[in-house]
Amino acid sequence: MSESRKSIIFAAGLAIVCSLILTLAATALKPLKMHNMRVDMHRNILKSIRLIKPDQHYDDQWIEKTYKKNIKCLYMNKAGSIVKESNRDVSDLPLCLYQPKGDIKAYIIPINTRGLWGKIEGYLAFEKDGSTVKGFTVYKHNETPGLGGEIEQAWFQENFQGKKIVNRSGKFVSISISKGSVPESLPEEKKINYVDGISGATFTGKYLTVGFKDILLEYEPVSIKFRKYSGKVPESILQ
Image (cartoon, rainbow, N blue to C red; front, side, top):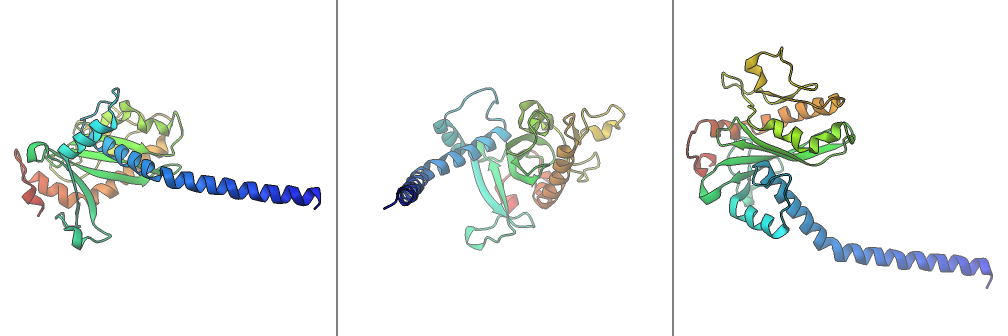
């Protein structure tokens, strides 16, 4: 057998062995990967309702225990009513409720929208009044580091706390992201619907603004139900 033929056979054999090793490794690590993804999702949901501080470390066990104790996730139809597992449809919307001791204190919706270079994914939480933002998190994006990538920073996300998705008349207007700081020239009654943007990341802000409006319009039937109540909000309003 020629040396070149031996080299080809050796290379092919090595490639097969490496492929098998990678396949086995991927299969063996899949449960760990799924666990990490689940914990990260739960971590961000808890962060959106401010049960997690951005400058502190929380281990997986604490995350899972706190999530199980406080969060209930379900699906809603376009009318804002809970859908049973057996009746779920592809058009139904995921929704999580923050229910310490059984009472609804806030609700959380997933954010999945276009960014400049790819999808921006996170969670937006609301107070039980159905109009005030409780918190915002981003856990996945492809925005430019140092520019649009600042959306993952605490200073940007904290801008959303206390902002409103309705105007003073109670009409839905969503949330808009400014080019840099919210301008002083903006009428005072509109400032509650705007957050400070990121200098040099105009397109990221524009895409997020459009994405927020589209997503929040889908969830508006749910928000309207919450707006009808003050004080204790029973889960029965979502039936």
